[in-house]
Image 1 (cartoon, one colour):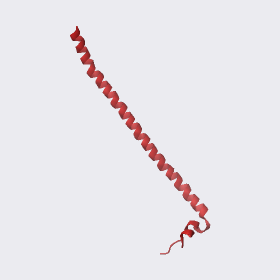
Image 2 (cartoon, rainbow, N blue to C red):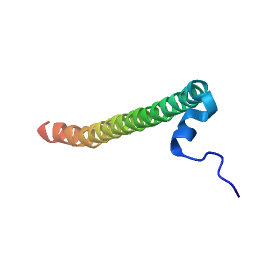
Image 3 (cartoon, rainbow, N blue to C red):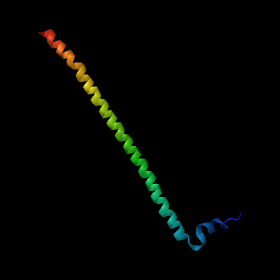
Image 4 (cartoon, one colour):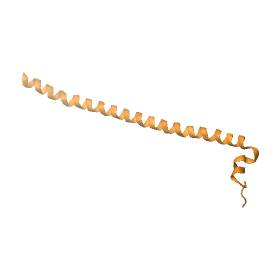
Length: 82
């Protein structure tokens, strides 16, 4: 098996087509890196939104539970005062 390029300099020169080859590599890798970053950012935002909604639903449930448990006590207190 033979190496395609005799040296690293020849590899980076790409047989005289280095500008086009490395431009194509950059044009491929930069959007892919952007896509990965955007996906991670969206995931973080989505998880934060889910946590906010769960916390809101938990607060609503606690508030409703507090109202239902407080209502009979206040009615019983009113009956005693009469």
